[in-house]
Length: 333
Image 1 (cartoon, helix red, strand yellow):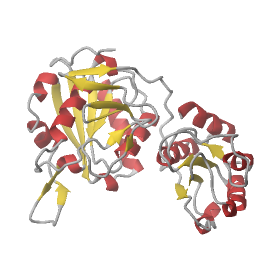
Image 2 (cartoon, helix red, strand yellow):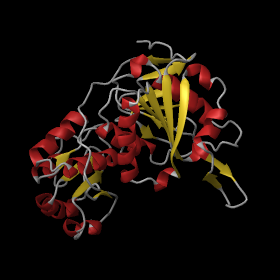
Image 3 (cartoon, helix red, strand yellow):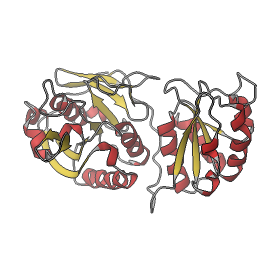
């Protein structure tokens, strides 16, 4: 499928959150820090005003690693206002450290049909071959595309269009760091057009939380781990995600502790691999996926541990009953 070309008459709001795309080196710090405003970013992109009428708002200015879930809840509320104000699309620029998580959390909560596109950069603005301007241009072209309307929250980097629910950061430094291992990209941006090969199925949003999200943590299985980090978690957190080996396996020594925790709170079984599903019935040894599910754990399907953590926290914030939590992971994986 090909989208209609973005027209200058379409209005795209750029909300900046900081991150590498906005970073430069100054005498005040030993390394790069977020110093550029949204106006600075937009001014550095040749041809941007030919893609859409671009408006800019500095929403946050911080490294991606410092963003909090509360910042993203506030962002979702701002997106709702932008749609009511008549914006045709919104681009969010931020640091790539947390972009796969912030875009997914936004996707869980965003209730509109207006295109929302996250982007960032792997190289600071002053470096040779800085990728920020090209990523911002491609993101604006996608946000101004009629084809992107109703497609859910998107992520655009390296001219690839990804669904927020599937995208992962796969490399620490490469300009092509983002991919969707389970599905591949939804499309690409070429010659100013957002060209969609497919559009993801629509999944209804969750209700915005009234207060802070409940605390949910991730514990990762590793060779020879005793599971000591599982001790006492029922008194510390509201939910747990296990980043298990392979298709959903943990050391046998973890089993009793996980079974006890699963009585006290929802415990979700995800894979630390980052691609492929957690299985349900292939293996039968103690600590296998079928054993853990029988002990009360909830399968994450194809969701990686980071997205599973956010989904579980959002469901707990909505006081979702356990059977509906199980269903939500089946529907959204």
